[in-house]
Length: 444
Image (cartoon, rainbow, N blue to C red; front, side, top):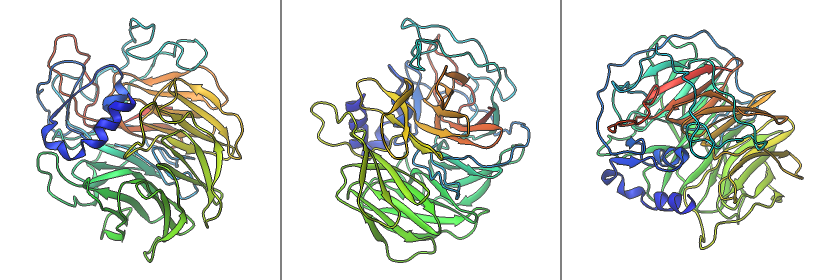
């Protein structure tokens, strides 16, 4: 899987030739790829086209409040920065927004459920089956209008489409999306600007980074209700996370091995930390930046700069891998712990550790696209499912199955939100996706 991701990162400039990606052994492989190549994806079978329904909205109950932490490089500070990651074109092969999407999971040959591993909570206990159907907040018409990143603040959910338009929806659904920032360039056979590694929020603006796969990225902001987009910085290389804290925007320039900051109104960027090896996934809590890297190290540095502290020594890169490009694993924090994934460990896991370092505790065996945490539970998406596990440890609960989740999750007080990407299904026996190219939610 590591080599597969490396190849994907190196093939960024071949988007126009990759109109179909094949979901093979693990759903998370195609999920990670969809952020670079959010095109037509086949569910482990031959490619094809399915019919598209008209745009539609789903109903849902009102939800307010903000997540206590972010996901996909989100900012977990009181500015409610949120990551992540990641649309909505209804497909004739799948159910509509009112369909029951809670069919029982079927054990596979490995003892897992619908492609998952039995005992994915690390205890040998089979994850609990979902008992409720998710709600489709909105479905988009075009296949390439897939949510690449998704986050939120208060009672609104924000997401970027592959066309780099950033839009938002009320968490209750029921109305069309509102434009926050327009597309930066015209999509042409999959070649265009795209948002990299999530959003950050304060009380007034949403912040993000854009890239076209070339040597330069762009960091921008726009009012939460939409308006003029402001360019804040044009750093070199891949941006592996943005976060906001106390009037300052921070980002990781992965190729430079550097953490930068700039006032949220703009100005001259300042180096916070440098000399890092593939840093990624920035979150902030109580004036401390937390980040990881491709080797699985967990590090911290004060927001004002200073010594970088290694809180956890990771498992290292796989054999014969010198470096990893465009890499940003899942990361989140709360008042006590940092939560993280280890993609290149011998066994892919989600774990937690004290904010001051120490021994890590494995919470689940999974390779998540994004994670988020509230006062009681950790939530993640891994392509096929949306899952939760108590932060104190325990059995994994599958909140939603048979998804194509590639963006999020975002949490408010009552619900979990994510984005599904478009899937082309053309083989007999392929599982139909639920809510393809959609913004989704389900009650906690």
